[in-house]
Image (cartoon, rainbow, N blue to C red; front, side):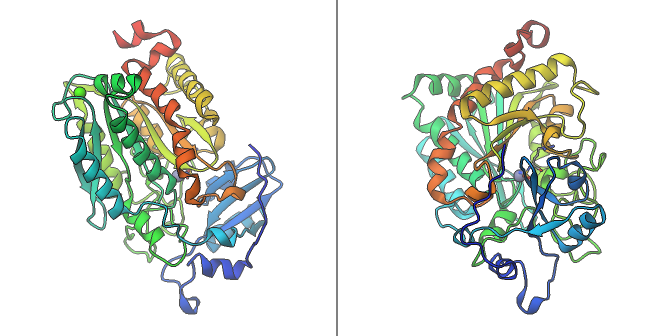
Amino acid sequence: MSLTPVRRTLVPVAASALLLGLLAPGGATAEPSYDLYEITGVSTAEEIAASGVAIDHVGEDSVLVTGSVHDMAELDDLGYAAEPYAIPETLANPDPGYTTYPELLEIVDELVAANPDIAAKEVYGRSHEGQDLVAVKISDNVSVDEDQPEVLFTHSQHAREHLTVEMAIHLMRLFTDGYGEDERVTGLVDSREIWILPNVNPDGSEYDMAGDTWRDWRKNRQPDEGSSSIGTDLNRNWAYNWGCCNGSSGDPSSITYRGDSAESAPEVRAVADFVRSRVVDGEQQITSAIDFHTYSELILWPYGYTYDEVTDGMNREEYDTHRALGEYMAEANGYTPQQSSDLYVTDGSINDWLWADQSIVNYTYEMYPKSAGDGGFYPPSSVIERETARNEEAVLRLLDYADCPYRIIGEEEAYCS
Ligand code: 0X9
Ligand code: CA
Ligand code: ZN
C-alpha cells in the first residue's frame, strides 16, 4: 500500500474548507467541522486512531486523517504535526452519477416488481430522521423462509462512502439479471438466501449529498444529549467490547464518536435486531457477511479490537477460516487481505459483533481507490461500473462457501455437521 497523492489543482485550505461546506457562513459553526489532514513520517496509525480522528488512509510513510480542530490539537499534544490536505477541486462537487437515497428506493421497488419470484423488500426499521431502512432478500421461493444458508451484505455505514451503495445496486442486479442466465449465479440464488442492506445510514448519505459540495460526512445525523454535536459513528456503536480499547471516541464532537451506549444509534439497533431475527430454532441462519466501506482496497477480518489472532471466542481454526477465505476472495479482486486491527484498532465495529455475538464469518471490504490521489472517498462516478464489477467473483466465492465457511480449511466435519 503506498500513498502517492496527486497534488494537481489543489485549492488553498481555507477555500477548500468552504468548498467542502465545512464552515457555516460567517465562520460560526453550529457543530464542529471536520477537515482532511496529512501526517507524514509515520507508517502506523495506532496512537493516531486512539486520539479520536478517523483514519482515511494508511500509506507507507504517511497517514491521512479527518478530524476536528479539537482532534488536531490532541494529536499535536501527542507530537504529531498534521498538515491540512486539500482534495483536488474537481472532485469537490456532488457527482450526479451517484445514487441518492430516494433513487435507491425507486431502484429497489422496480427490481422487486420485475423479479417477484426471487426478490423481496423488507423494511427492517427507521433511521433517526424516520426514513425507511430497507433490506432486499434474493432467493428462490423468496416469500418462504427456507432452510438455506443465508449471506448478509451491508453497505454505507459511513455516509461519505457512496461507492458502497453502488456496490449494493450492482449485486442486486447481478443476482436478478443473472438468474436463469448464468449457471453459477442461478445455483447460488437457488441454494442460498441473500440479504442486501443497500444503505444502512440514509440520513448521513442524504446530508453528505445535499450541499453544493460534498460535506465529507461520516456519522449518522443523531444529536447527542447535552452537546451541540451531531452524529454517532455507526461502526463504533456495535454491542461487543463497545468502547473497550481506545479504538473509538467518547467525545460527541469526534468523528469516531461511539455514541451514548452500544446500539444507541437507531440504525445500528435496527440492523442488529434484523441479524438477531435470523436466529431460527436457536441457530443463526446467516453464515457469512461482508460490510462494504471505502477506501484503500483491503479485505479485513475480525478482530479489530485486538492484535491477537487467537483469543476469547476466536480459536485457531476459526481464525484460519477467516484468513483463508479472506485471501481467497482477495485473489479475485486484487485487494490486500489482513486482520482489521493490522490497519488500526477499532472497538464497537460490526465485524467484531457479527463474529463474537453471532458467529458469522465476516469481512470489511474497503473498496476503490487505493489512495487519496484517485479521489479518496469521492472518486468520479465514471469508475462505478468497473469498481463494482471488480468484486463480483470475490462475492461469489463467499457465496460458494456459505454452506460451510470452514470447508475452506477442510474442517466441515468439525464445524458443520
Ligand atoms: O474505521 C472504520 O470503521 C473502517 N475504515 S473506514 O475508512 N471506512 O472508516 C475500518 C473498519 C475495520 N476495522 C478495523 N480496521 N479495525
Ligand atoms: Ca430460498
Ligand atoms: Zn467506512
